[in-house]
Image (cartoon, rainbow, N blue to C red):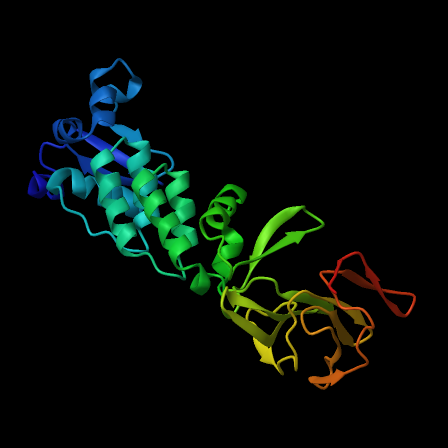
Length: 301
């Protein structure tokens, strides 16, 4: 039949894709596609028409689909996959749709997984949707450095955050839209860190990577950048301390070492100041009228 179609022998219908006429045989179309079977066996005008105009499918993808109906063979590529999904959805070609879905699963990469996830959701490809979501969650540390993450829908972002809520994850709330997003993960899992913001730079100081170890490390990330960068570690244990910013400095006060330290963010240097007279932990702190204010917390004898 393919040779007869090419020679236009016994052709009884032309499918029209964006003005291009593709010769076909109704018996082949109806025998391999439920959409055409219903069309040609109904009392619709198309059942007796010499030309059938198919809107929403361009000529390139339309010819590929016709070839598939005749040969059951098709070459799926990154360039034609979405067009074939559109065509198979319109023409109710579930087997072709599955072929494209299987192809896209094999194409998943950090650079395209969000785009493929959105395609899966749009065309209701459940297997591809589940696979791409798992791929995204498992490789969030790589994908977060790409622009792909900005294409996530709100629901998918929530799903990813719920399944990737580790001690390395950094979440951010946009106060204009009140929507959550994510920053690049921390350099290592960390609990009980101090956080301070100075001139569009976010600093993370100290913490406990696990119950048996202590970190005095300092890392920062700048607004508009994607990666955390190391700075000079704090000279003392910061557990239970509080942090406040004044001008270009971060002050770390109290805690397990009863510290009073000042970190100069401009020169990346620490200075140890006079210690508090009372040992306290977990106080709230902030800058107020040019002074560091400490509130609450617990005192230790």
